[in-house]
Length: 405
Ligand SMILES: CC(C)(COP(=O)(O)OP(=O)(O)OC[C@H]1O[C@@H](n2cnc3c(N)ncnc32)[C@H](O)[C@@H]1OP(=O)(O)O)[C@@H](O)C(=O)NCCC(=O)NCCS
Image (tube, rainbow, N blue to C red):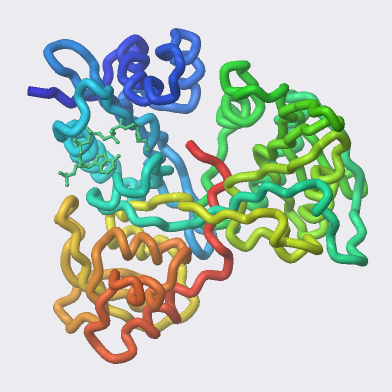
């Protein structure tokens, strides 16, 4: 019999986190790792799976506040470090951990949960839906020219981590406040995740560089990147890996990317986790050569359908009724009416029927109900239901989370 319970000590946290660290091919988490991790994480939010006294897996959650359409920030469990050792896989341990975790999130009153999935097949069964997409680029520097007539603004300087901690967060915050899918970052989050640079996370690259673009002395964009330097017979073959690139104005974003693409000795500029509407595709003279790839971004779970739906805003004041299926969290199941931006229970005839995971795919604005219906994920029960729902949920800003947590 496997017991699932919150860890009781930093030592147990390390053992539970080893459930996933094992798959990274790294040594088990150290005391120092646990100390750093706990700067952003509540100990009691790490679950351990225990078999006859031995910890064989774990699942954790950060307490985040995530932007939803309209700009409100909702309490969101940022699910993380989920893993079960290969000795205990496929015995239902993940399912048991998801049960305890979602009940806990519900009791805490967080309307949403969000995560990055290692494999797309895992989390749908627990009601998580794919809620945003990300773009990746592998830009050969020789194809890095922009269309003609695009001048850069401002100037770029390198800063140390201490200065970065002061000048980068305001740029991030400006973008975060208006972008569904982005979460607030505390100073300790910046320190431990963006600005620290432990060698075991360099994956063969050099140190992190912190570049800030200032316009009239004010920081408007930044890039965190590392160089993976290589030399071939014909010269340098370095890859520049952009870890995070953000800007608060279109000119600043364009200019910081120009800076990155122009770094000498670089053959390839590689970037993942970019927004689906990244301006790069329209800026580059030869966008096809940037080898864009599309992938899954944030997966979202509406833990409390009513609070989640009432917590975002809508493009119109119309009305729609959804019949929601939710096997894993039955407290959400049933008919929900959305009217005047407020969700409530109703017995009225439904416009649409769908699974809670598919409602989550539409929630941040990542997918339209029309697109979901085309994929057989939404059933229209009344004429015009899909159009009515799409008119309400239409997003202003494409959802994006720039960071895997
Ligand atoms: C993913 C992982 C946590 C699953 O743990 P587990 O204890 O083996 O999962 P369970 O036995 O509870 O499986 C639950 C269900 O998910 C399915 N499932 C689990 N992992 C799956 C996977 N990788 N692909 C497809 N289906 C999967 C099982 O078949 C089972 O289906 P069912 O409920 O319909 O019968 C485990 O395989 C693991 O640690 N993988 C490597 C690390 C990882 O990817 N972690 C997730 C990070 S986001």
